[in-house]
Image (cartoon, rainbow, N blue to C red):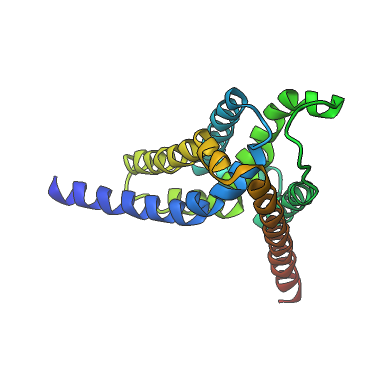
Length: 216
């Protein structure tokens, strides 16, 4: 019994540290907060819920059925990386083109509440939170489970990490109030630039792996 508990605990710690490192809640916090800054407090809470639930469902599905899904649709991780890079680049470009005003006075701004559902699912839920790295990790971890009960450890690790992401998103207004409008605009453009660089790196990684597979 002690050996069983020790094995399960070690596997849980492996799952937790791996997912925490790859999702990196603290590292992506500024990007997440900036992306939802233009929405009202109730909308940000809704986005936080929908985004984390989306990411949670995606990771759990791929933890149990990832290999089957990829094989059935003939999808590769590299294709997922390239797709994620394109979405990241689009979001980063929008962040670079930030507007200073925060009041919703134009027809476009008035439709932001309708856009909150879309942004929560993509790019926040996937691929920003549940990105190629996190999805690949859940698939690999599920292939190395010591026993059937170990799937609980994977699920618990996913829930703990995404709970942290949810709390960051839900309380993003603390960062917004501390920095002010001008400070948020400066950081928004900086985070947009970083997000675009991450996007390019995603595409480079995907294309490089594909080329290596072709040439070898």
